[in-house]
Length: 396
Ligand code: LMR
Image 1 (cartoon, helix red, strand yellow):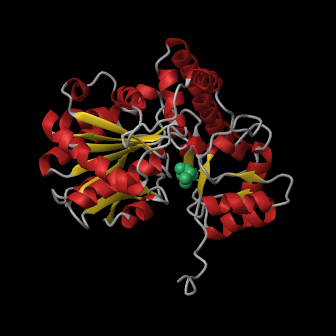
Image 2 (cartoon, protein in one colour; image 1 turned 135 degrees about the horizontal axis):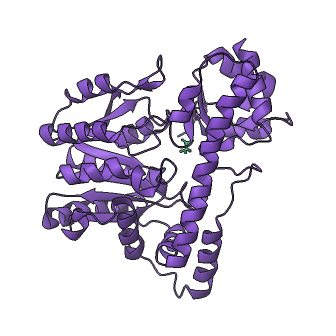
């Protein structure tokens, strides 16, 4: 059966983490995967999560199945977190299901689209998260790209993006990053969101919004601004969200897939079809992460504590953006890296070439994704000098 299989190439992101672990360099720095680390290089379990876990341990009364949609309480609270007090909730035009992480949500969204229209096209930004294309193709979709990042000016190429989206057909889906664009850190501003939302309404293409970093950009509500505007404007959309980053629940695999439909009754039908997609995939989502999140969001005290902890993570990354740029100047780099302070979330491109990326890894034990994407969340006061001195050396 398997004798013809060949070794597949390493994953462009997770493969680097494996290499990093095996590296003996005592100064090594892993700037690859988007995992938050504190100033001491630890990915902490949030204190609000610890409290919620303790509560669940003491109070969980049953391990019986929850069903393919997962916990109804989690689903309701996550919809409110993403959308706020939005009309689609009041109009009963949204259904949310719990999924195994944000990737699980993307896969279910893709399979739902493919079940509705086999081989349908989904447009993704160029560049996008290294796993998007793989997930969508595995579900049977056709993937096309629209221009997004302007590598020369380290900004958004909005004119080209809009021109490309004007060519999208009404039967297509378009993937948009709600905030903290992965990998570029470059987000749409409110006017640009408005234009994309109007275009979506005019043409009729369906937005699929990936919101994996809510709270890591400017704040929970601001980060959802574009998504909420889109929900104000279009009749149908899909939202794939993740609790991996903002609740620090990476390995617990908890995310959500939400469908917004034209009417309450059509939404109920789409959601029932989505459930059939889940049933033949993994039958039901894991419950633990959802239980933690619903406990936090159901308690005013724990929610307040979560806001504080989330802000601490967001602010630390923002501080590291500024520090990185300052330290590059201090160590004699005369290329302008100030764009890094104007981008959001965990990632930015360094804009260095493949040789320089390879030298950082081989000579300095610094692991950067092949696109030159770095995770700012791995930078700390303790490693920033070594990092920026190393970058200065490879740029010479
Ligand atoms: C990333 O982009 O680094 C994270 O989302 C981790 C992953 O699964 O790739």
